[in-house]
Length: 295
Image (cartoon, rainbow, N blue to C red; front, top):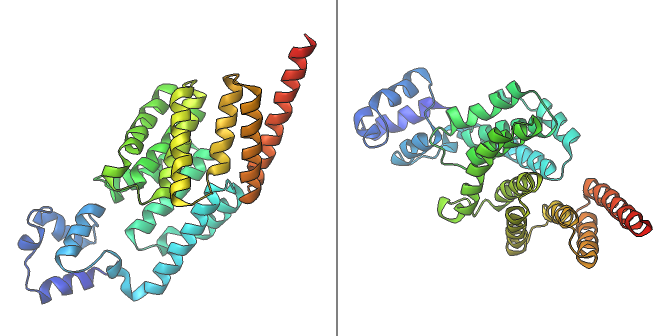
């Protein structure tokens, strides 16, 4: 981060540290940033930059091409994570070093991807905690970006896999609150990440046996996909709806329709993971019907 550019702009505008920090943070916080490179919370840094007519990314303007390239890399990695291509995501994150990332939003995205992947592939709890702590305890201390609820999702997934339901519930309740208030919090425009929040929360409630809440969230996710004309999450949402219908022993007609829809969306999105899962689910379901008829 080019802190000298920040200082030069403040001095060019003849704004003292006291005046610049007034109503935003303490003068000591600003001083630590300028003298020691101690970066404040993203919300604070955004306000300080705005008062100087800058953006956070402007402080990395001398590396604009690199910043853009890294942002594109991270977006592609996040897309592959949504498609459950975990091996590819793992390799890409190994190749991408955090030291290369200067922009604060990109750093949060990087740590989110590291933590979420570790949660999904049963990584160590210490590694997962470290990644998400970078977000909630440092880069987004004011909890004003969608990366904080995304971190909560990852922690909820982790505790679910560790068979610690009370801790998992603590985080997923928070995420559910964020989802229900997405419009007022400004997350509605970040619909792909909002879909991530919706899917994993719906999955958690399904595992917990609360199919009413799970199905309501699934319906919200499908509606969001329709409204925003995106299909990344449709195969996964439809598969979860199918699983719920089987567990609830709903009508054979409904279950088979959901299976067909899941297969169709999986093929459209080239999601081979869901294709394999729904084929296995169909086989188990048909075997269950045959067994019950024989009895």
